[in-house]
Length: 142
Image (cartoon, rainbow, N blue to C red):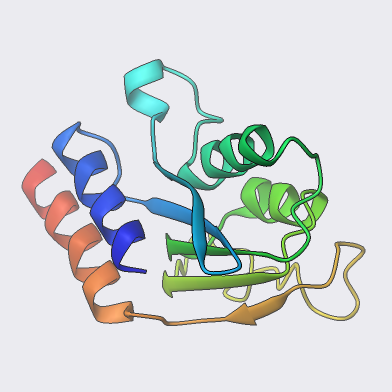
């Protein structure tokens, strides 16, 4: 999660919402990314999407079975769908997103009744650090 936090800090320095994501396989970092929506003027470029795409390129496969994702903020519906379709095995997230989070806060897209691929879910990892980073970023914007 520390690498994801470092990525989130980079995002903040670039004026992006500070979210970082890392994909790990067998203890090795495969990809690390942060939000690029504002920089690239593309609302699809969430940290999770970029990290998934980079991991697919690095491993040369469309399925990321056996890979874990660490992300500083609970994923939205788009990112939950991408996580599922990429077949990640485990998701660890930091801050809960009471407005847009769809892993547990709003839609519970990974619960047993969901059509999405089942994934092990670990919530609130380094929650205070992840949450404080977001709060500080938005405080500075106001």
